[in-house]
Length: 516
Image (cartoon, rainbow, N blue to C red; front, side):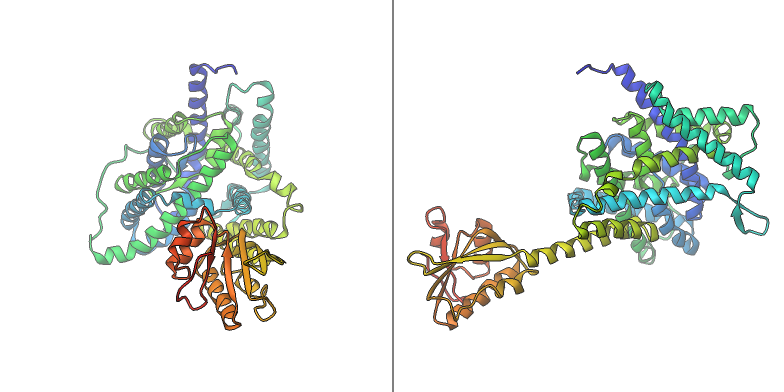
């Protein structure tokens, strides 16, 4: 394989970072408006969080900053208590995230099934798409928002189309320059030199400011403040980590590499702690900007750091230039992101996968659009778990046959014995009709929980009342240890000699057992 020169890699990272920084500006401003804070609060968050997570996070190439999913939670806090309470909440949010990473709980994201992941990605693509509609609206003097007039709408759509055309066509000519950045530059030049009247970044708000300064949030440090901010901090920490870790998984799949989940949790938390003390609104990973970065060829930490530093330069020195970028160019970039974010493969196979998986995908996508990402993912995990439990309850059965001495009949159990399958398990046996010596072979089965253990005890009682003995064959080491701790298997010698016999007898009353 031909090795890519380091200079070429550096150029790709820097250009990708510049592209991402331009796309971050209107997002940071818009999310600040959603949260009810000054636009610079959003810009500071995008700079600080983007810089620290890119430098220390567990997923090179992932972009973090102020996000809409967090902004919609913050708005009530800001409205009821003021922006200073938001800052201290972001600090507490970061501490919680760091604790989750330190306790190595980030790996719990593995509980998110593939259908939930597909639903999350498709739902997020819909959200990004719908969010761009705000750029096609205008607020009148009476405060009522309506669609742009026909002429302005035509100009806007034309510029969006030109941006998308440049992004789609440039890679056919060369891949040495990020297509998204080229689209922004071409349309910006067209608008400036042709003097085309259209909405620009400067029409949203000025991004001119100073370097963010350290300050303690101006709130009372007492239990009353903690009671106010703790519920918000917990919700924000959960949403931030769920969105960040799912984005991490998505980039892992795109790049064929593996990120470090717990390290990312700690980095996100540390970045939010710093952000709260420097007047930022907090944030997490941004799937749209991350997709722009990855599709621009970036794979390392440099692009994220460069994007953050460009944001700082925009705030300090280049606000007048950035404010001239047409919104249409950035909308065009985000429309291309939508096309790249949608899991088209999931749409093609939706009729080929199990119906339950297809329903979970649609359900999670719908909840993502209707509520927020955290609720959608949690709901999806719960539904997936219930579906799994339902399937488990139906996939447990026995092959029965006459065994050799000392057993007169052996049942070969297949499936998983847990709370969901207990009822089916009990119906598989009839102690009254069975012979005096009965064995259940667990070679193709596992006992998973207390409900499964109790089902075995209950079955042993039924055989004992019928004057018959029940034996367990080929229990796994974990199963035997579980049953022994519950005093269902009391013969330690039988367990110690597992390599020879793999046979134990259970007592239906839990009062003793004998090895065989």
